[in-house]
Length: 180
Image 1 (cartoon, one colour):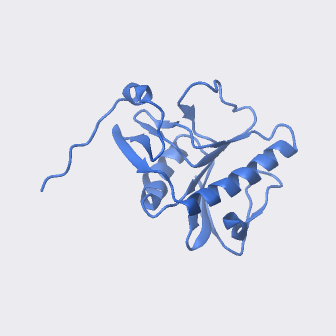
Image 2 (cartoon, rainbow, N blue to C red):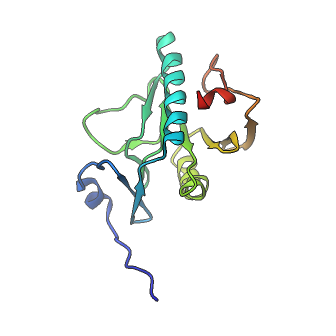
C-alpha cells in the first residue's frame, strides 16, 4: 500500500484558506498542509487556566504585553502553525488585529495531546526557538508537568512545583492548579 498524497501549499496559498472550522484546524509545516482535530476537554482546561492566569498577570500592571490564544503564527518561510497560547512582550504588540499570520511570541505554550505531543516537542519547538521565541512551555497533562525550553537549556517542573519565568516577573502558578 502506498502513502496517501501530501497536500503541498505555498505560504500565500495557505493564507488564502478559510479560517479553521470547528472539528479541525490547519497548519503549514515544510510546505505540507497538516490537519488537526480539535483538542480534548482536558487539553482545553489546561489552556484555559494558563490563559486566565497570564491575562490576569498582564492586566495587573501596565506594560506587561499581551497573551493570545491559538493564532496563525509564522515560524519559517514555509511554516505557519497555531500554538495553544503565546505571550508577546510590551513593544511587540500585534501590528494588525485583522490580519494573519503573526510573529512567534516571546513565550509560546503548547499543551500536549496524545496525537500531537511528538510534533509539539519536535518540529514546532525547534521552529519557535528559531523564529525568536525566548521560551517554550510544553505542558503534559498526564503525568502533569511542564518542560520549559530556552535556547540555552531546559528544566522540568512536576505537579508539585511552581511555574515561573524570568520573562514574567512576579508570575507564579502552581503546576497542580493547571487542571482546576
